[in-house]
Image 1 (cartoon, rainbow over the protein chains, first blue to last red):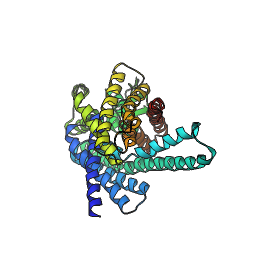
Image 2 (image 1 turned 90 degrees about the vertical axis):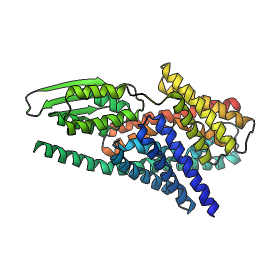
Image 3 (image 1 turned 60 degrees about the vertical axis):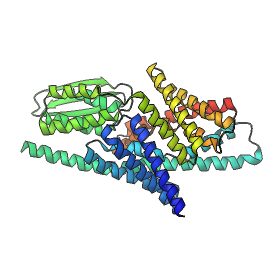
Image 4 (image 1 turned 30 degrees about the vertical axis):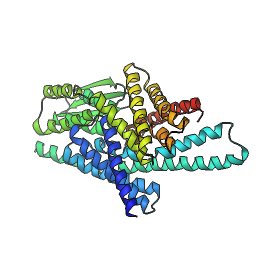
Length: 169
Length: 242
């Protein structure tokens, strides 16, 4: 039990490194790198811990992505960079690559000659299940990370109005 | 100048809403009113003086899309400084030139850290030490090929196919010869560095913001990249007969 939790935290570290790799690929400012590592790890841990306590993978991904979105917005205020600089690298490690890969394998199998009439429906079922999981997790990630940004953008616009009013007056 | 700001933001991975807010912010601070038509490949701008006495319009083509968050974040900071410190147009122009010439991370650092990200992905999907090393090597060379292809001005989607093909050719070797316990993990994760995260997330932000057309354009762009990844991976798998 505690060993499992430990391995979840170990994976959190790897989530952080995956986020860091994408951060460098997208050329984010240096001052944001460590924060991105932290946000990526926090989001990944949320997802894994929820899954550990038997939450559905789609919901867990959504929760992880929402946390990433919220943390990115507050990091954006502290570090003076737009929130998407933090949120995009941090959310990418949660992309369900394994499901997408299995779906593709299934599609290749279904379109090839190797499949017989007995195994066809089994393969079709597996492929559809993997594909739908991929699709829904991706949607959960994108929506989860976008919602905090959209809510906070309204606040920024308000601030601008106040500021320009104050300047004018 | 405002067109410079807008096109730079658009081509480096900012969402449509952000382009509009930032350009308006700068224009307002300088005492003008700006109206924008934003599409993915061009930008149209009309600037009116606040008392309505003079106006001017102009269109600019947006350069090919790449992601550079240092630029996005730099321009965003600059736009605040325009309000707070009353920068002049010359100062803003200087700042744009400074921001566009900011160095990227050294190539070796990028390659190593992205390869490390590939290895991390592999660990997350349940791979162990050996598979992680394979994923590291495959990602390293895949990204190298992609950078080279972009340098040689190949079509960006073709560059993705090349990268995904070469990465999966390397990681596919271990599957073909059955090295390690779960070699498929290395194969599946070695192409993940190519996933179009920025187009997809910006697409969704645009769609929810009401910029439906730009959202659809970005989404289709992301889908083509995803298809290109799958194509490269499939070529490699057919060659190895996996």
